[in-house]
Image (cartoon, rainbow, N blue to C red; front, side):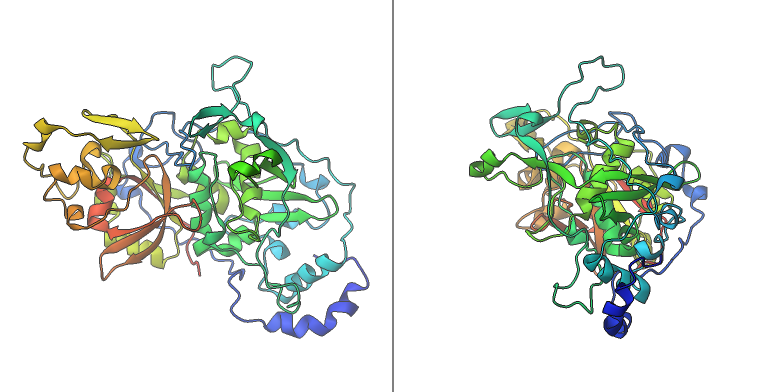
Length: 484
């Protein structure tokens, strides 16, 4: 992309050497292509994720919510689309046409001196578009009619401790200040490298853990993909976001979307409710790229409605729409191939290859002798069950949900004395029907660490994989390799 202000090169020429020589750039544009494995030979047709369409409601793989507000899951559908390429602002065409898994030219190539120079220049001079600014897309709504449901469509509710209330009573669209991506302090003008981190992701009151866990996984392995995913039009304070869709996956541009996001109304601050309602910056000065991606995904793939996004979705579909690469899905449910395929050795190999990965936890169940509270099952005292011997399951079989300490807590150990989890003094609780991303693997110690997309402070689960996987539902392995 050429700089269109004649003063730019003169003003910034002194900073060129420092910008081009900056080291340790985590946002490099490696242009890495996926190392595809021929996994079809050990996958059954029913075990492969629907990469190009989501599962119906009620399917064990339709993961979902895990939102701090405790919401549930459903299916996906296409939504609004962006402008044709010939109506894009100048310089956006190459961004829109970037191949899967590759950053879009200077939009994401923060590792090149030219893109760093442009990044610094854009903060000083506005760049003139070649065409009149496009009219921004309408902001997503808060109501949605499920298939077969007639208007008027119900409004999305938000759960509070004393019940659920319509989101429209508490939320407004307002501009959210902040940088799209993290960078150095303003005074460090010679190093304005844009940065992406998995810690930028913080899920809010929408049940879109499937999307935010996918974003965190990609941020940890391929930050250049996310840096190349968003382009800001400073003349209109709007954004364009590139996803992938179709078969084969091809770029799909969404925009322009405004810089206004759903935020809590000002009179709710006394209840400690302020700022963005859904995806939100993970710190007061944190970047806003997760908010931008979430809003664009809602507009494009979820009926242009946060109410539809709130119903959950398939992480295998979402991560492919972000990276442009296929996702393999393995089921831990009876009849699935995950126990034979997703061994500790194989998961460690996938991590070494840079494959972004997420896992889905189990569907919540109503259990005899239990009661349901805030989406989590809590075992009640059951003297008759106390006399039963501890069950013995195969190491390649799921632990019964109602007796699983990872969901029920140590109280379940009264009935599972032989479970290795029960030897611990405390057990990390898995959120049911939720998406986590695989943060790391300790092959020598035999453990896998799962991270929660709820943001900093959310629980991180590090447990032996041989036991942890018996409490999971699915594992999603995106085939974009060669990460940092």
